Image (cartoon, rainbow, N blue to C red; front, side):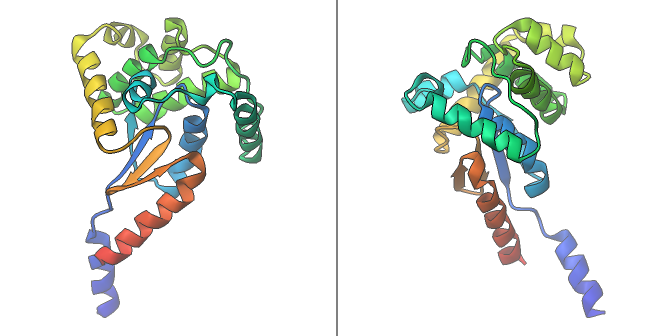
Amino acid sequence: MRDAADATRLARQPEPRVDFFLGAMSPYSWLAAERIGKLLPHARWRALFLGGLFHGAGRQSWGFGERREQEMAECERRAAAYGLGVMRWPEPWPTNDLAVARAMTFADREGALRRFALAAMRLAFLAGRDLERPDTVLEAARVAEIDPERVRRALGDEEIKLALRSETDAALARGVFGVPTVAVGEQLFWGEDRLEQAAGAAGARAADAG
């Protein structure tokens, strides 16, 4: 009887709140997105506008800095190690991610953020497609089985624009200054290489709740 009672109690325990903040122009976000499903399957995906995030945090992408070549090589190494294939970088990269961020906001409302974000980032980092271009964004919608015409309209929708701005501002208010970041409650884990730490923290919180 005790085993059955314990099983019932554990089944009813709420999962700790886990948020996965990502930006489609970030190769490390892509690497994290490909892995997080196994480590943190209950994480809520949160799409951000990286241009707005960097501006609000007073930062810029490493893609514009002196570490560019070093970081690109590291991304390529990790992609190979994870069995994701050979990376092909868009030219130019990085570019403005506003359109794809709005499309991700729309996809989130459709319950398809994970599907769309993975489609978009695979186009960018495996096919070398520029996510600033609307045709690439609409191709990602087709791959993700979302009506491209609805996505095209969403890119200019004022409600979508406001929702994306609010989501990005809220992330900044929580202390998110780069992506990928996983939030486990109030704990923030910045970086694709900290997914395992985030998963450990989530597991520890779940154990404490029991």
